[in-house]
Length: 351
Image (cartoon, rainbow, N blue to C red):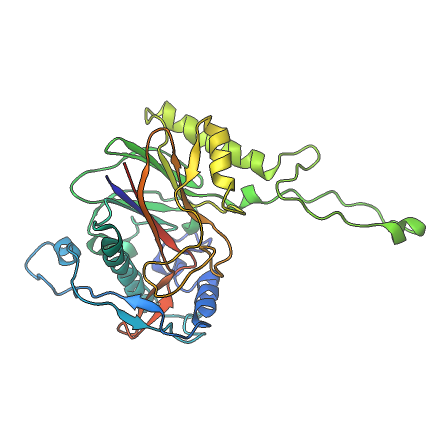
């Protein structure tokens, strides 16, 4: 029963995919300031081994095993801690500790480390991230190198098993791993925007007094155009057909940043696109596994939008376990935590 893990970072529109493209982006700043408003010590920092551990072994061996010991309960660093001009070296340190924290928290939750770890908005092929495999404790199986930093994916595989890429395109990257076909997505923002209505001439007199503007309806069909739902169905249809053409087979799992407006959108449009039944892997409020006495309604910066989800093919797999973790990473030697992204991450174990 493999465990698939997904964490989206927050990169800008830069054509350079370096560390600077990820450091203290606007939504990451917003996420930190929102989370820091709750000043109570409610975040868990798990023990990890330092980089110097097992100095004579392969780098990945340093962080391979779970580390015993209690987690520390800490508060977020003050608002304004993450801001423009934040040091890139400090930010990478937070990124690596975020990866290590995800592993330790995940082991406590699922009694296993992730078999496949995917990062959204990260080009693992860039030299700035060449050491990331040490902290993921996995071999990089593949990375996209799209024009914009925010459009990239990087996939790492553990346990000596590799993942074969069975398709990729704007906003998605698909693998086949141990017979499972898994699609990681970052649905393009442009698919979620309805075309602007045509401009009308000025209305005068009595007609102007009576004129009202109709409220926008979710997924309303613009005159002569597609609705948002139409575009999403086409997006997933193209993914499914490309994977089949490449010999990948039927999709078993889709996970990542879906940009959906509500929790029911993605399973509905994927089911329409494939003619199969896809269900949400998680329902109800989210309790982050790296937090204490915290519950949220969404995975975005303000916790009010359910963007980052997993949906599964009900005919081919079933969910064993699923969990989420926060946007926070250890900061200032673990005495506090700070946001390293605006996205919550998640992991799912399927069979």
